[in-house]
Image 1 (cartoon, rainbow, N blue to C red):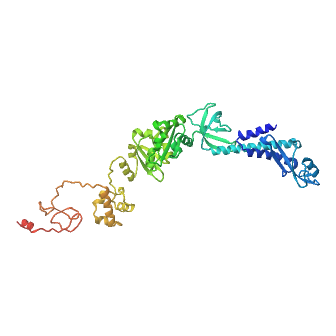
Image 2: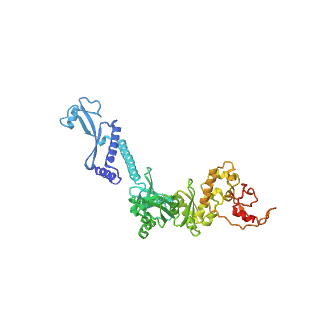
Length: 485
């Protein structure tokens, strides 16, 4: 019987993983509970285990007195000397309790208390052990299946592999080895929830296959998955001499092929993370070749990727999978368009200039509101006076422009400078049309230019017909002599 108890204690220690102190303390508490139920108190009781746990005994500590008032706590001097020679009054004796003094109810209470306590200790121990392993890879074996959920033998505990955490590409057979991530651990059981669909599962596989990731030479920025179909991994390195993508792929792709085999053929895109959202989005849409990325609204994280016609289906992916994963990886809303579709978009003047720059063309700026650097006040002043086109502005004189309420000479100088910097003004030459002869004007009258607006004037005019400036004609002596002759 004693050997049975020793074997049970050893089993609890070595097989259940319960510490020796906890096992002994549990048995001790159970025996003290039985003692208390039998004698009403356990303050004077002690439990002692023999060597190698072959036996255990309960001792009652009693004080030696002349007259015994409480037999539970006291013992007479005569009785004490029968047990121990030389006992004296006031000494405390540890007297073994005969197990026969306990009735069946008290014995059952001790057993139930022990079992319950050991179950709780075992549960708490397992929970603490696997909670510390949460997020790590574990290997188990297919045990049974119910409603698509698989129960996995992990040794001292059973793992729960839900159907929603199983890759649609994978199937399992009884007894088959399963490598999975410990996704969740709950105290109920405890229950160990396994997963092969979490992005963290790919992260741990990467750490096993790529030493540079394990030692932090290369760091993973983010992993997004559509389990069973495609995974995108953004990596970077703080060292300029390390190629993060090349290290993950490995020589001749040996490293990435090992990961693909572990994921049963799931496609994997390894790309470089970039702090510039345009370059990062461009990388995230791989394997598509993206011509350019245009940020539509930086605050709302919306962008437009432009690709060649042949790359449109690759960038979007089957059922939009590729662009959807890119959205999640970059945390941007990405719209993919071809060059023709991009040109047809109703964009602002700023977007149109970006589009022209995108395709290597110089856009012709015709309107004042398309000029970079003009504020809304300036554009509004001229627009309110009916001057919206650059051509109309250039055709007006300073006097006309300054007559507009709110326009200052500084505004005119600023607008003209912006026009000179951004617009190529081409003066077209027109053939002079024959002008009808004015009444009283000689057919061969000399024609001159107004010094202000360069309109045609003749010597008989006292002011310019176009700008109204006063005219005065002066001739050198030689010219006068010629006229008189």
